[in-house]
Length: 170
Ligand SMILES: Cc1cc2nc3c(=O)[nH]c(=O)nc-3n(C[C@H](O)[C@H](O)[C@H](O)COP(=O)(O)O)c2cc1C
Figure 1 (cartoon, helix red, strand yellow):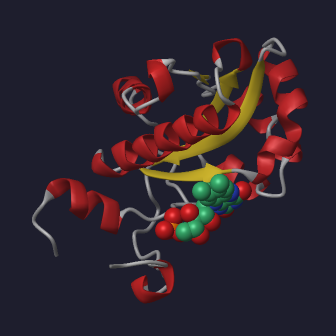
Figure 2 (cartoon, rainbow, N blue to C red; figure 1 turned 60 degrees about the vertical axis):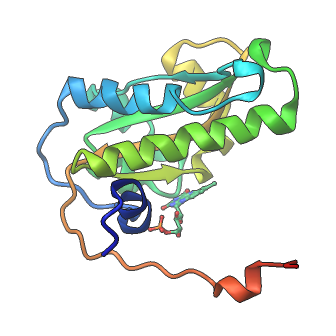
């Protein structure tokens, strides 16, 4: 295993979709959001916005909004991440920044011993989720991070061979 802690975190992070009942500390939730906030963004415009959903009744209302209801049900906390259209300056670059923010959050969760998965399928329910949270249409849902203490840590994942991915060298 690589001894570089950043590389070690990058390579050992896996999407976690099963969680224990244990609740996630508020300080850890804020640390994960802080890691997201420290992602780079074009012109440092920081277009990300975060919601924290811990209340079980509110959280259960997310279940019918995605085919991944089982993950929502098992997660201790949901962090819906939005883009603020009023803060945007360039759609491609702003969405890239949100991706960087989300990856920082996943790595932070992993480094804190927590488990997380980036839920993208649920963005089809952008409007319903904004309504549930009482948020305006200047925001658009980019993903929901489902978070909790991992029930297991034996997740496997694969990547293509690097040779397939490097399209030019020379
Ligand atoms: C844009 C995006 C959308 C994703 N949407 C979902 C999703 O809706 N449900 C889910 O279970 N996993 C989702 N994932 C997680 C991927 O399935 C996962 O990252 C991929 O299979 C690689 O596995 P790993 O994260 O364990 O390395 C999403 C990941 C990304 C980056």
